[in-house]
Length: 108
Image 1 (cartoon, rainbow, N blue to C red):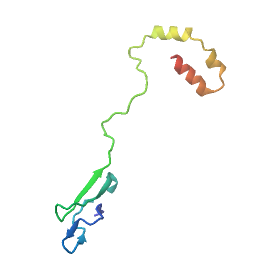
Image 2 (cartoon, rainbow, N blue to C red):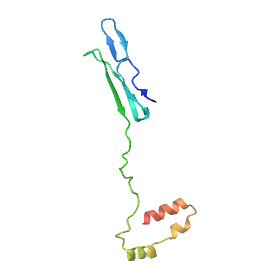
Image 3 (spheres, rainbow, N blue to C red):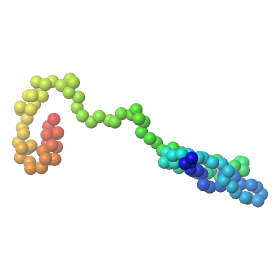
Image 4 (cartoon, helix red, strand yellow):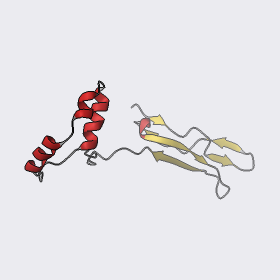
């Protein structure tokens, strides 16, 4: 069946002999979905609390942030004017493409 028990510590104590046993289970077919599982001992009953916490996964419907420009409302005439009047000397004088890109990106 491919199931895996995530609880490995004893979950039950028989008093007064203090015999311990693992009788409470958390079984899954996909252990990679879980970040942590364990036992919380306490004195209220002879059974300990078991717990399991799932890993957080990205929501399939959650959109990635978009890092770009929207040109839907762009003033094309103003853009052409900006391109024509920009001082391109610093871009042309550099031999490093990354530096040229940074200069261009800063200007626009």
